[in-house]
Length: 200
Picture 1 (tube, rainbow, N blue to C red):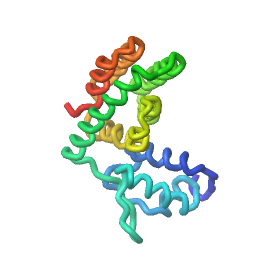
Picture 2 (picture 1 turned 90 degrees about the horizontal axis):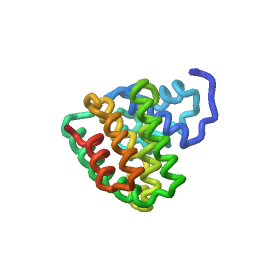
Picture 3 (picture 1 turned 180 degrees about the vertical axis):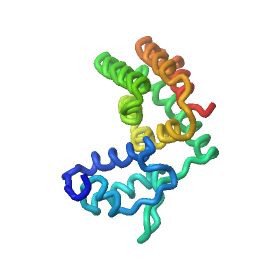
């Protein structure tokens, strides 16, 4: 509630802002001041500035020094490039994760896939569940470079998926991904993820 300050941790603040951009609460092209964001979330301006810098590094915002920050636009070209990169990198992550997951992690991955399917059907928490799933798989791919490159990137990917154009066959892709992970089939997992992420 504006005016009431909350003690949000830096990570939680970033995720709330990233989700608000990815789900369209802060629309592409919207101009935002640190003060306005701080009032919306009931926090001080200092952590907001830090979060905005991180959002800029993730490609979700542009920072105009001493003026304002702006949510990045989604152009057809930007969407195409983002999705092609995501399909390529997502495929490699799945290829590694399909073979590297422990039995316990496989159970968790399937639960996260089910959460993502439910969010598609309900329309609630779509961004959060998909980001959580792909962050988990990225972390389990046992490749530090993927973690470094893609730690905040999934918000941008699913922002483009959600706002850039309608989602197509997302549930089917997720179900195919679950089957592939259970079968430890890297190739089938790659096909499922590329179907979900590639620009059609």
